[in-house]
Image (tube, rainbow, N blue to C red; front, side, top):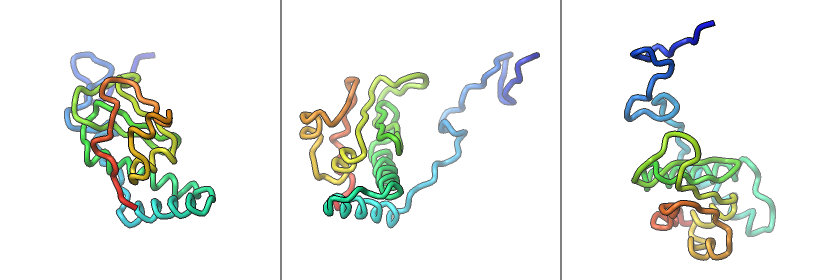
Length: 151
């Protein structure tokens, strides 16, 4: 059995390199969350928290993805990866990027911590000192771009 080659492969290579400027999904733009939907989800999250109720999963997912989208817009680049499991992750911040494996600069937060940071309810320093932010790498800091939304 012979290996199938990617149609763009050249010089006997089985895998073709990604052309510059294309995303990991072949250059197809990611769908964007509209402002009305994103802000509505943030409002739903905020109201649920204020009432002591759990946030509906769909609202939490949309709020997280919308604020990660906003971070990606404000801090374009690929030197830091921000992860908010289970709803999303983005690469952002100018600087040296990575292409394989675990990135050198990673920030991971739970949903509520991320949304509190994104909406300005808590500062990066407060969350970090309370051990609510897991960050590794010398560039793992997105505080210059926070808050992303005021609600």
